[in-house]
Image (spheres, helix red, strand yellow):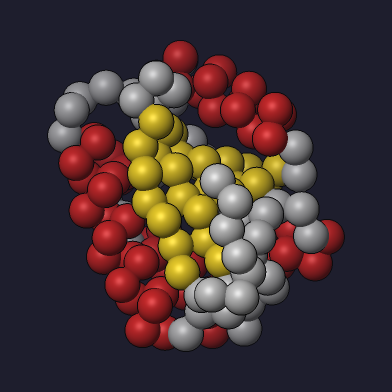
Length: 133
């Protein structure tokens, strides 16, 4: 999904064929946007989890710039606040080396991996969703 990096925003979706909650993020975020995103994400994850089938998350951050420290740490706070059944395999797709480094530093959790290649991210997710991890 092509998006502009000049507008701070996100799009949440669901790919039913691949059983993936999809996230597209753009622009420089502030706390208010992060809080709206957190609420929307929890609602989306809960609705998919309630179906009772394995699923994963693909976060496309290829048009997402490096964020301020409070915002980047806020993403891990979202993860820490999730119910255990919402801690599903999550692939974060980046293209910027700096964003990749920031993501590697922030997303320290066994169910989250950072990728620079979409094919590798999809393969990793398919393996884990297929295994019900």
